[in-house]
Image 1 (cartoon, helix red, strand yellow):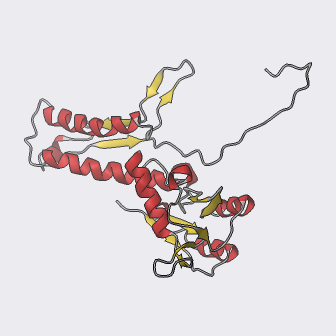
Image 2: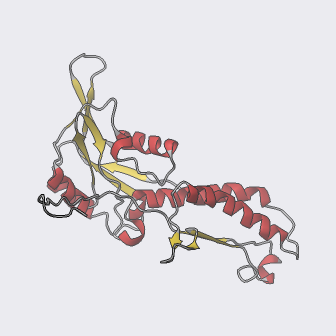
Image 3: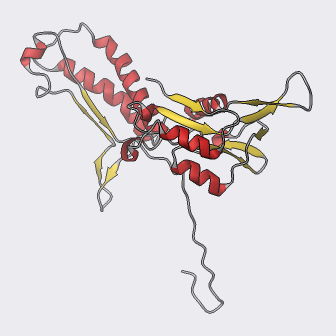
Length: 250
């Protein structure tokens, strides 16, 4: 139920970092890992006016923590929420073109925006971008799995009755976990063309079909949860078109 926030060496360049992270693409745990570039500069607490360099994982972790506290694990620790109050600079300047190149290679860059330093990426290393493009996808699923296990602990050693009341209580507990996440925007609801909800972004099944008598006789009760985790708007574009005085702007 954890993710790994990783970085490169202080003197590693953009090119060497891209080469290094490529070796992680085929790792079975790639969806649990996120990489950050470059190192950051912080004030030297013992020498006023001087700075120290530091690997960026702590900054990324603090940004993740702030995002989770303010919203939830589905909120990326990037962008405005990651504005640093203690980080003052970067070891290597990352412009838009360089940052886009890093993002393409599944590396999250840190950028100076105005007078502040921000985390400017939410990518995992996974090549399965349909499911695990964002590290928040894995973090959200981790959170749901951990919370589900924690909430269902109260039902361990309950009597399995023929009327299905245990099934109903388990189902209610899981819906009670998932629906607030949906309301907070962490799960992506599906709607048809007329605006009617197709599904709430999750499903919970605790039925006879997945709980045959032979399993119940052995004390085994199963529940299945499916979730559609919301994506992250990490690329926003705007088109500006000029119209003359005699042309409609509609």
